[in-house]
Image (tube, rainbow, N blue to C red; front, side, top):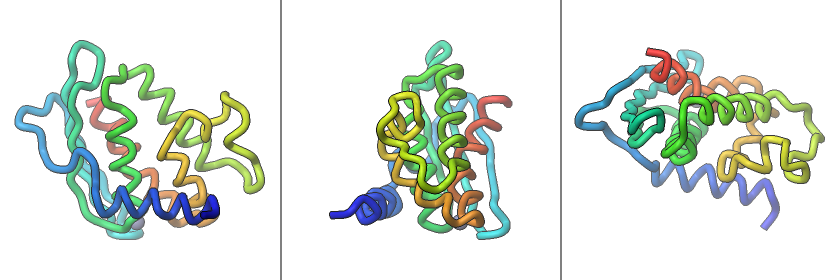
Length: 147
Ligand code: ZN
């Protein structure tokens, strides 16, 4: 299985079986985001244990990129502090803006090496219109954390 095919499988898996889907009973923070270009909608709810995210839920509809990216995001942020999450979001954004041809996997300081499943979204940066889809959940998360 080629890398592109593997990435596609990962994205489809998160799209078909979204993680942490639904709503929290008593969210401590929440935000809604829309990407009108594509019609993607996402609601994110978060609860904290101290400074760390203890629970996160996402509800939304839209294209496979937006929904799978949000699903991956929820898995990646559980148990992490705001500081760690900011770092993760930074790496995600870095990945989305990298030039074609850069190798993400080799250098541990490069985003692909630490993002896990999220790495599968790196192919999206070849399609600038879809970057907004992939970023929606992340931007909405930041809004929820700032609120
Ligand atoms: Zn979309």
